[in-house]
Length: 292
Image (tube, rainbow, N blue to C red; front, side, top):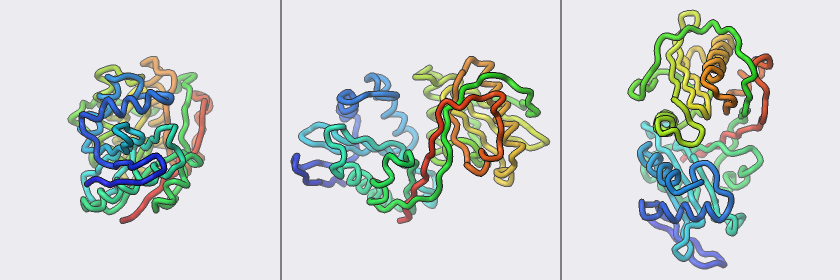
């Protein structure tokens, strides 16, 4: 399925990307301020293949054979779970001209036609909220996203059971800390990037742990932290706090100085880790969702 959008600049083609488009996506980012996966051609290609391996789809907007828009979505195993929009970027020269809206709408229509029931994203609260509202996504809730600096260790009551490998991904636990969507993609990205030592990914360090007889899983990839707990323990503040202390100690021992933390506001408001963390950056992440 392809679609054309007409603008003053000409006719813009919206379609799914293929391997021949990888260099074009790379060039789009080079004309602004490339960061993360688009710093060089090798990382750009790795990212493209990673999204595909994670059952994702990549969509692009093309004007005169030049990519001016790029979007990535990751599909869940169950069509009852939401499709997750991981990335949306429009070339600097074409911002605020509705190309972002059209690209999101186009990808959402395809997902609906495939039988998925909802579509979710997680933008900066004030950055792209208006764009997603125009497409039809509604605000659900805000939660803090932080970059923390680890300044000290602290005794943890959590006990390590064993280290896990790639094949031991948890399927019966909920995400208490970290992005709640595209779990397969997060797991895959952590192992693939960590094993190749790309960007600031390390390890990854994946520990099955126990606290008061409750088994949980810590995933630390040198970039971000994810904590998986049983569904009935999602509001267990003591468990989550002790798991955070254990994770912080694990990072400290492996020379990881800073971590990105995504956590529910109701949980974060009840924690005090100021003796081991300094908050370098704190912002709100807005969950937005559209039901088909």
